[in-house]
Amino acid sequence: MSEAVATVVGSFVLVTATAFVAAHYHREQIRRKLLRRLDFHRDGWDWGSARH
Image 1 (spheres, helix red, strand yellow):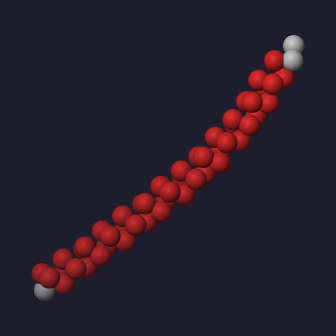
Image 2 (tube, rainbow, N blue to C red):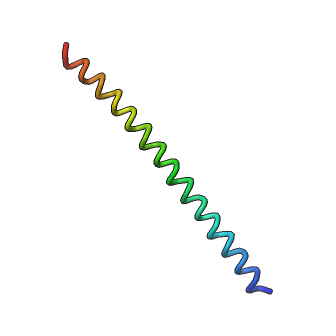
């Protein structure tokens, strides 16, 4: 019985860890996309101020 409980608990931990890793990866991709957009807009402002 104790082996079955250990197997169930271990499987649950692995599935939970996999879900957390996937969520973290997704958040990082969103963050990179947002930072790229911010850099683009900032560079646009830098070019505009350089003309003055």
